[in-house]
Length: 263
Length: 307
Image (cartoon, each protein chain N blue to C red):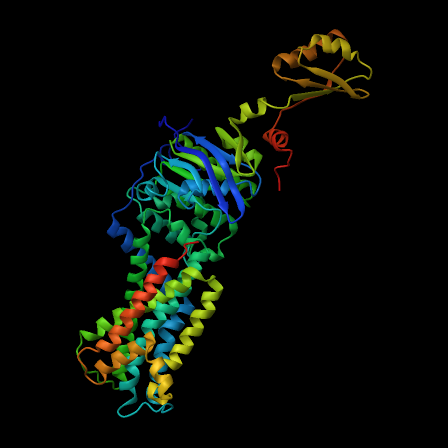
């Protein structure tokens, strides 16, 4: 036999030399790939970048909704930041993961050297990176519209992370249990409903008292209300809203861990 | 070379709800290429997926490279390469991007550019996975299975839906894997694929291995081979029979068309031609019909393999 195959790889090319890459490198590579997939997807960008930016500009400049006293942007900016977190951690993640499950991506990665918890860690990192980009963009737009934020700057990342955990749990629960098409439909529907009824653009006190009390327990309402408490009203740390988000996070991540099916 | 089996399956049972997909299956695979052959629904994929750690056995024991695919998954996964029957790639990822990513998950991966060239994936360019042709998707899945330089690869129907040229290229690569010391387990429902490639063939039907051996050994066993020739009608078949070994048979099927069955080896061929020479017969159109795996399968199961 000649030293070279007809197609041109030298003998010995495939000689086994198995081994996993270092864990940190695997997770970083996976997170980088997941982030690229998120940013490359047009529908995802519509959801995570275009819609929040448009809502912020539109409702800050056109007086459609009565947002109470003060500048509209001071009310809207915290709500739109909450919406951005929901769009990435919940809607985007649910849809992407649902289709990855459907197309065998999760299955294939399941026999790669990357452990499953490493895949989940990478997904979380990708969500956080995307959120940082969203927050930077939305803060720049809001500042350009005359936003004047207040409050404890450390409370904001805390709320954003708690919100991310709550929405990720719910998104992964949906992606890991429903069919991909059902996840696509349901995740978009929930996004729309929570956008309207979660205190993002329409203040909850516009709803009847009983409805407002229930809606206030939604993760999107807790996140937008908590951010507003800090950024608009200068509160130190909104414990009540953080508590609601923590409960959603525990329930959602717990249920996702229990019921998530990889195939 | 590894002496102990790369895969050892004993009494594997796997049920999906009421359906029993694998029913007490035993399989031993050693270094080289092992083909798991059987019709659709025979339990090939379930068996291989139990080896890959995707399926928890309802009963029985599975050892891959000496490890339990579920309990020792963390140690086993870096050593194996897996090609799924379909999918496994982000629909928005490019071929080279996905392959480079898989390489990054391994400590000593193959050179990605070499592999891309070898499998003709360079033409995929910036096309994302969902827009690749079926053949390109198939070759990418194969590349992903080998890029981490595994000791053992599982290929589930690696040439399903490929054109003959791409099929040959895949076979060449699989043979190179064997030459370089990679153990290969492949499932197929193509007889010729098993015959061409495999050192060892396990025939599966209804969730059990019903025969295992080299293609040659499997073809030698079972039914007899056939030699046909034509000559002038009315030859003395009884005299021919006397010249042949005891276990052979001869008959004139239609006038001038003769069939000899038995262990058709060079000796028997020589016996037939010399008998013809002695009787002044010019044997025309001599044809030896070798027994194929297809015949073996048909005899063992009473079923056609091709679905």
